Length: 262
Image (cartoon, rainbow, N blue to C red; front, side, top):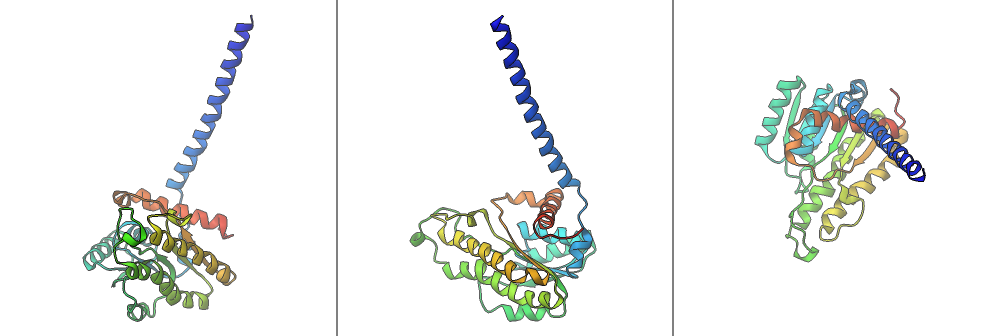
């Protein structure tokens, strides 16, 4: 009799465990499907301004944001180093979304480029800035003194670009009392990464810079955030569903953390 009681007890425990995991799976699936099919708040994004500026827009994350912001009805300015990639991306965006596209070819590893960018952005009502451009000199892990001699280039590309582009565009956002700045950081910003020391430090700068600016300008209606992404294979960015999910998750994050209305 004791054996039968124990058997029934373990069966009951097993059923309860299965039920708990089933509920967790259902909740997870619901979250994923809702984010894929959720209708994005076009009015919110467009209310920031007519134009979005994206650095490093020729490929990867920058290209994905460019496409999705254009699909949300914004005109986009694509800034990157390779003219051929910019032209191809601009043509595809105009053909598939109908939004207006401007391109600016520049090299963010230099520090004398911002007057030219400022001149080319003159007259545009910029509501969204995505600071995405960045560089990792070498994928192979190395000690600091054994790293390629591109220290100044990395600082200009990963740090100076964020500061200067924010300075250029934040001024008009402040005067209009609205705007959105998204700084694409990395998971390596969350704690020190030996053998990627300079790169991880540059991404950590983006994190603290974004937090500090948000505290300064939140009362003026401007949202400034850093996004922490890990390594994502390049082929993923060709997926329209991924691009939609990327922006959907970000807008959902804003609604939950920036006290935005519907």
